[in-house]
Image 1 (cartoon, one colour):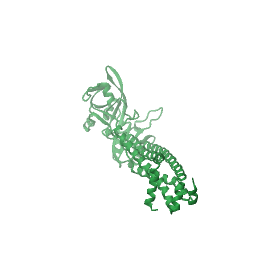
Image 2: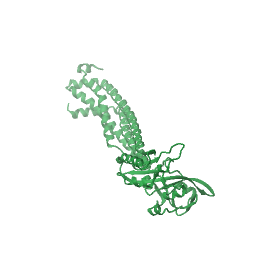
Image 3: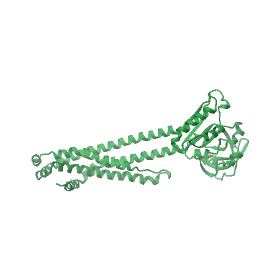
Image 4: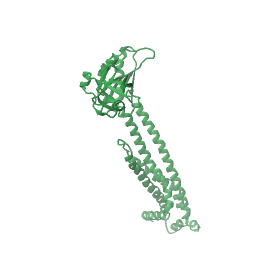
Length: 398
């Protein structure tokens, strides 16, 4: 019996038991669809989480002075504008910025309302990737002339000005009155964990001297040219601050690398757990294939005896049942992969506009290979048992 005839006999056998073959392949369908979906979900979640973290600031390194408990720090310990200028000259640094915060209040309908007043430098928008809703950010003239202009958060704009356009409107904080030139928000919400609170006002850093009497920074930001340069920029910032300030001054230099690493580790752990679940589904489906094939061999014992009696070789009987197992697992794998691909495509319109669901071609290949291998592995025992049947004993079987 040639290979083509062996395949034909295997297909005919499956056609005669369509329901059994369909139910047997159901586990393979679930398992292969799970593999594709697991990898897709893992890639999507990883991409989303990392984009959210990076949305706080791309390739960001920042430093703050460590304040000693119970005593005031000397002014020589404070981070200065000169530190920022020196940091700009370091290799691997794309942009620098500095900030200084101060609790303040604005008057709303005769009532004082607390706000967070933040003095910022020119590069703050680039580094923190602020989104400007209305108006504009500070230009170089605003910074150099220390113009009394400000930007307010969207929440504060709605609180103070309601539905009116705030651009060009005055807002008073303490002894100074500012003109609103823009409305902004963070690209990714930090939920108050950064200097930008829900109701905040940003002004040119030079104006903070009117309130504090000191021209210093609370946070020094530096943006590395690439993710690979973050570690070197972190070292450069640490060394620069130590070299420019007294030995007993302490600074906390941080990056997003640890957070990104934790996000990747969590994503990997989630992927492994989900893949184990998918593997269990395939294992169950493989056991199902083996059980059904063993039953099939028992039911077709007489048929096998007849084929052997008319000259069918050992390997032809073996191949026939292996092909049946392959067709069950392979067909289930193809259908499962199509389902696994269709689900992400169908839910794409329901996701936020900036979120794309990546489908890995490798997951499709792995799902098909693993599913077919499972079918062949668990189908070998029944196929080998069928091939070893003796013709005389098979023909006597009722």
